[in-house]
Length: 372
Image 1 (tube, rainbow, N blue to C red):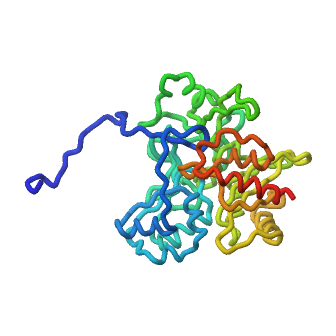
Image 2: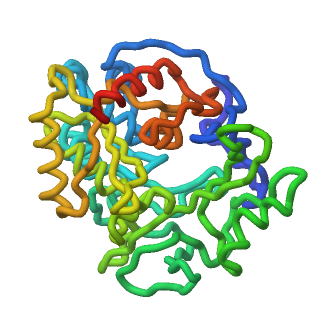
């Protein structure tokens, strides 16, 4: 080893050579592999950063919001000066979580990058470049090199300037998925059929009839996106997470952001529930910060918060106490389960992807309180 050169000649490969194989459980379907659970203390992330002088911290917004619940004390115990970059992925990051990351964890010196990509894209497609891209809390900012995004209307019309609709990509790029193993037709139908000529950002899962489990169909979840006047892209969540309340389209991500801006709320998830007059109404699950108690007065405070941030049309009809939210082992919120609980469905289907199935029983119990 001592006689070896300090320089290592790189191995030149084609840009399309396989780099890795990703196994993903997602928020639907059965997971491919299971991890071994561990139960560390709430400062474990910060302990690891200090011990190993971590320079880059990449996590999910859900994890950030969970850590926010415990305040700043667990962070103050550790030296995080080694950190240079922080980034999030998996879901849109709300403004409050972004600012907490930037101000508290990064001490106002580390950029917080909201990155958008999929298993299928092979890498980042929308992402800021550290120290080069001016940041906006909650925005995935601009396309990466070689990526040409577009926003389409329901009828497939490409929208210019400030717009909101379906996120698609106009041309291929190195590293993107080429097929589904042994089922190329499914690959074409999933990503290229709805909007011919575009790659459609969407997830597909197998949905079984909740009563009989006999007939199954593949359902697409399409990514919603907004482009602002500066050309910055904001992932608004899946299109199916858009709510139509009295003819007004509301983004669940926007409502959740307003909920978590209340000082008592650590985390929130919003789903739709049928309403005889409005078509749909907002059913909100909130996880409170330690030391805060759920009460009627707090519910009214939270409703007022949303009303002031977004408008009267976004006032939640139901706010339910959720000591914890149903999540996969990779930390994604299972909104399907939340919708079923909100609608009082008895048969919740396949729950094998849940990290803690007991959460569902607790939520069902609290649902009765919310409904009352």
